[in-house]
Image (cartoon, rainbow, N blue to C red):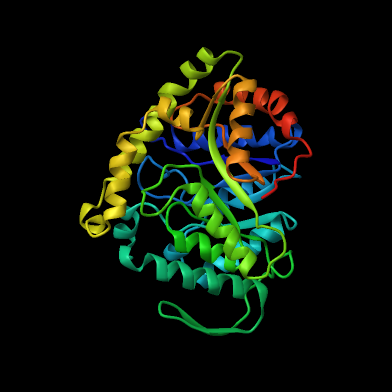
Length: 358
């Protein structure tokens, strides 16, 4: 099992400046190689304290690529609906050159209706735009003299420069959370899957069932193996359970408060999406204790956290990458650093050399 650092800010100017926040994140990135983290990831969000400090994950990963010489760099993910495919593909290829072929491209479909409203992108077009965007960007990365006629973007005889360092292109991840077709599509296309072990609406099925759809689609498409699964967790590792709980509570509550506030914006955009409205209701009901009990928030001693990861690994029939969000909400960087070091020193060795099995 591999362990990767993930950065998904939920913080605003009243808490900490963007300059301070990102310099603190880069300080944690400096520890990634010596502590044995295999990858570094960042998300794309806009405008609000939930995620808004990270409008350009490729920018952050460019900086990270100059601080870590070993870790893979993973967008977790870029949102193709908010960028022209020619621009995004070119920037991806440029970063793959700058990091000497360590980039892996995660694509996300966008969680927040307010972002779509502010960009003027219809919420009900997001899935069609996502599918077209991923197809066009991957083609541009793989091939030269590309011509594509799309519903939203069309271009003729385009070769993006620079060419990506990796051939035929950087590996692709698909971020999926609750839509069965997203899991199935990722499997059919032989893309890796990134997700969280969240509770799901009954009509969608449990996350275990959704991951099963991904692996079934992978197998039916004739690909070897069983795909690649990254499961993301917020983590607080401390010498005692009480210390861990005390350190995580305020920061995690701020994280959830900002997430609920962002999700509840643009009600006119989301009014027709009943799943989204139900998701907001579910978010308001989640407590830190609920997340710990479900294994989605890893808080406790190294032994507690190792047991929780092992339980999730068994539940999903194997986790290939454990994505660790070590800093979140308003958490102080020295607390995050202490948690990160203890996690690396006393949790990660339990899984050294372990290979996920489905």
